View (cartoon, rainbow over the protein chains, first blue to last red):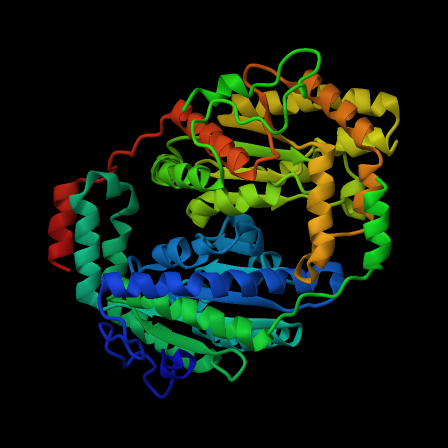
Length: 278
Length: 278
């Protein structure tokens, strides 16, 4: 597979100018081949995750990964969590789904609730929605003033720089689907009674503001992308592709850390003797 | 498969009086067959979990599951989480590994940190260690007075009754291995450099108190078992069996709840028209 950290890296004036139905850098074609390729990455991901976790024990390493998932409704965040994150040992995953903020959370700065849920050393944190909602829906729905939103871009840059400085590898993903693809996926939810709970009328309200959201994403990505705080825009019309791409980006993040099994901090032979005598 | 909720239910004066190498109620024999049978339960567990999650949306149901895992070191809690819980959508799992309490936690009642980590409606909570440590290691190591430990059995009974009353199905599991099996598993950790991080000399210190721990388990189980707060003692020498058994108990808990897809709280036809026009 080609290096997706390069191919999918957000760039230029319009970071969303990528065909949402494309499958760049991947030889597999179609759901079946994609799913097979995904399963081929599972063992490598599992071993790297366990090494990351092990390396953090005893306070020996502060390294950790934070995957930020942002997308319009139905873009496939849930499937990424189920199929990519779900293949990793739950003990090494810190998954947080950020919903509309509570009254208590609203009374604090927008980063307050985010800071409380950051992954600890050795963990892979997954933010299903994130602090970016505070410059996306807030911009589109005028929930904050333009000045406050302006301030937030800067606050996010400072905040994320702090995360990187303290050992976090950040992977920020925007799952990018077309407006037509979203219509099809919402229609499917309405067609199937066991999917009705996943739909709510507000989804169409948001959809009517599609262009405003795309513009809010463009600005947020341009303002907060940096060499150590990279954004990736992943074409999402093909779910199998988006899953492969996220797995690939996670593998790359873990390989960048290159975590090692920590050496014993005790005398192995002494312990073997103690154990045998016990 | 036989009904393991009956076969494995803790009972009598000595709830640990079960052969740790037994495989009651299961036809499969051996790692391979056990693993195949485990994978056969995955789809049922996934669907029930999704139904449980769906049923809780919109505040329509308070039902949830809490799996409490207790065991001596190396008994296989980690494998249960990886292989049984790991097969479920991470979005529906709330996994908490309780470590030695922090200074802040010690300054509060022992249930304070537990209450903060209870699963929300629709979730499957997994406690890897739990409030039972406060009557197990505390009893064995005299970390609390006998009077305080006595008080805690009652506090736990009240606490768990409250959980059940508010919609939680409790599944309390003691993974039970033999002292010899533990020696073998610890020896394996000492033999393999990539496992060294999992071992610490304190493991043998605890092992030397094996009989005291078994007695503490017997008392804790007898004092806190009830029809709605059941303890299960699972023979753990065969890892494949313990995994199958926990999956079976989780399936039974979910079937007891019997969660249903919630009906739409909107007009489906109206929404189809709105969507088509958007």
